[in-house]
Amino acid sequence: MHNAFPAIGMIALVAFVVVMLKFHFSRARSILEQWAETNGYEILSSERRWFGGTFWWRKSRNQEVYYVTIRTPEGQIRRGWVRCGGWFWGVLSDRADVEWDE
Image (tube, rainbow, N blue to C red; front, side, top):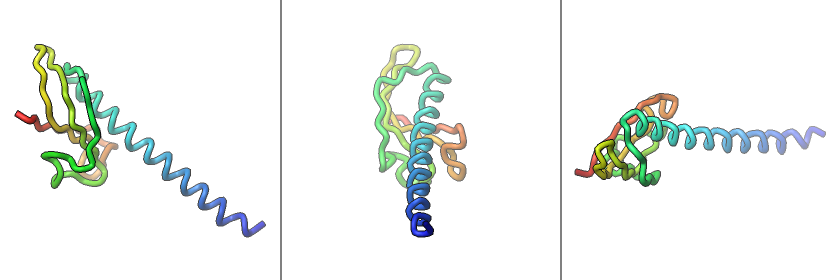
């Protein structure tokens, strides 16, 4: 019976990691959508990027960066980079920073 404990522990650890990753990415997406809604933008496309464009050297591992194409309330199409989450607290923070391509 005691030989089952390491296997159960590994299964629990893997399950925990999967749940935390799912939370992290869904929370980042939620921050992005909240940012767009707050500013009156319609997200036409968004791609999560490992190398955060203009944020690549100013991004913590707790943040996510998206390359987005949006439509403004005036109908203008804009493209840029949105960094979701704060530097220290990551996606536990509601922060979103944008840098436009223009």
